[in-house]
Length: 300
Image 1 (cartoon, rainbow, N blue to C red):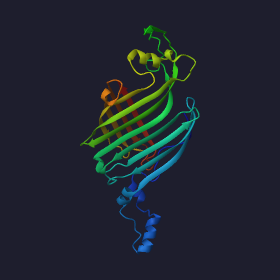
Image 2 (tube, rainbow, N blue to C red; image 1 turned 90 degrees about the horizontal axis):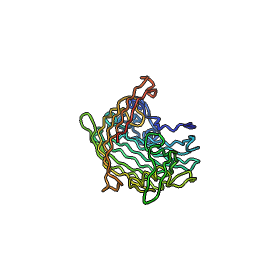
Image 3 (cartoon, one colour; image 1 turned 45 degrees about the vertical axis):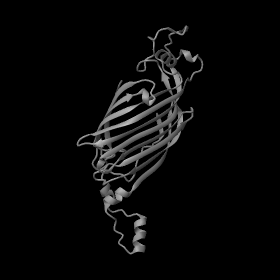
Image 4 (cartoon, rainbow, N blue to C red; image 1 turned 120 degrees about the horizontal axis):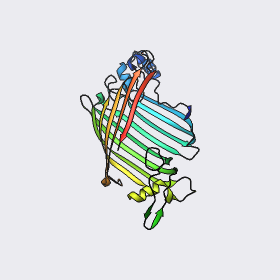
């Protein structure tokens, strides 16, 4: 990926120690109010200024990737404290959209909100898009030589070891709510994933020869669309200084997902995911110079 214009979600006024950064600042509204009211123009309590302030930014983006071509879009971020900044994490909402020269597009909306003293944490994502993925058959990026030939309803299907680009449209939505306990967050939520208009992108062979078609027929899945909907149970440890651009702390998350047919999923299934991230700031005077180490793993 060659990034032509960085679109990091920044809040220029959000520093590691917002109290120090705002201690001597006074905005135009405060000056005008002091002139017409006759009151002192001395800033209000710093923590109250920070709490009532909304941090907002909109940035254009441009990028190039051989698989999607040139892509342009826009990213917007909003941040606000819903409690005392000294005990409450900054709540963040991010929204973005991009469109590529190959016809792929996506819209994403995310929120990560914290109540006063971080007693409750609400996290959610909505994604709508059109994209393409390489289908190598079963396995982690390995072409499928072992499927073999088979018959289905008197139709013969030859083994095909090729990889196929598959176009599809997706809608994803999940919402999780966490409750803070003495050392961790415990939560639950719902997740809905809908994939439709699944089709071979090459168009030079019958779709019946693609891995997606063969797998769907063999396992009783719809060929052109399917749903993966389930319940979420979460355990999280999070002591980062803020979620949007952390400079220090640890983030660890374990998600148990149970896909259920009564929620519309095509099959019942269980899934476990975990994430771990550790942040180190390399400078006390310039904390934006940081080092992050993180791992993510999915166990099906």
